[in-house]
Amino acid sequence: MALTIASREVNGVTVLDLSGRITLGEGSVQLRDAIRGLISKGQKSILLNLAEVNYIDGSGLGELVSAFTTAKNQQAEVKLLKLTKKVHDLLQLTKLYTVFDIQEDEAGAIDSFK
Amino acid sequence: MSEAKAGRLTLTLKSTMESVDEIEAAAEKLAAESGLDENERFHVSMAAREAAVNAVLHGNEYDPAKLVFASFENTGAALVMTIADQGKGLDPDSLPDPLAPENLLRGSGRGIFLIRSFMDEIHFRQLHPGTELTLVKHLATAHKKS
Image (cartoon, rainbow over all chains, first blue to last red; front, side, top):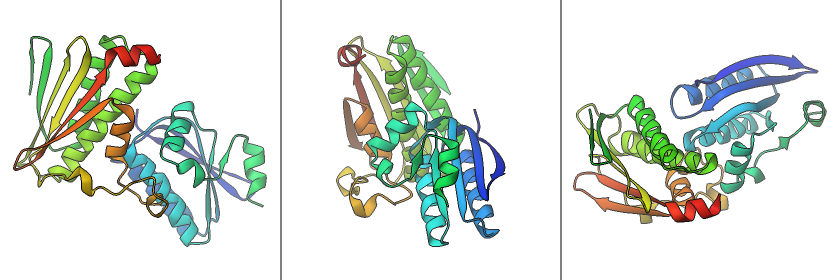
């Protein structure tokens, strides 16, 4: 299943609801374009809702890291929301759990940007 | 192009993303038919995907003149998959540790680490030109874990 991305605004935070797979190729490119597009428009607070993402490969993990660093370099912030068990385990295995701010609750995640 | 011979499936594929998906699907099928649980199936298919990405992207560099060769076999004791490219060759000892603090924020370089984490054995063979990866999942070990 390819990646789909839906965007919404909640109290100044852009929430990207991702669904499907973040893998080398189309999925990674879509995510990269979405993040860069938001940052180029001056958006500083981006929340990636991964509740419906059940698969990320090594390249997809790299794309998440790139999103994090791209945002940081532009004084913006990317946080992750609602990891599935598979994605949670992958982030722990690769120690990326220590890099990202990972939130379980959307309201709390939105507040955390303030 | 595919060939199934005495329980062993072999594929000869172009250096494309479609080939990566095909190798992943073949690994998923092999793992499912062996009775592995959902978590172990995920590990086997993702390891195969990472090896295929290495072959297509880093080995053959999407060169249409170069092919990827894959095989899938259940020996009864283990699942054995080979994925080979015709690229410049891969020195596994030269790969940076993706868990080292200085490498954590790199956008690439996690593929071989993931394969090592998910499979029981990984072997590298230099083909001159190219590299062949052999990935092994011991079935007894996998069943015990589940």
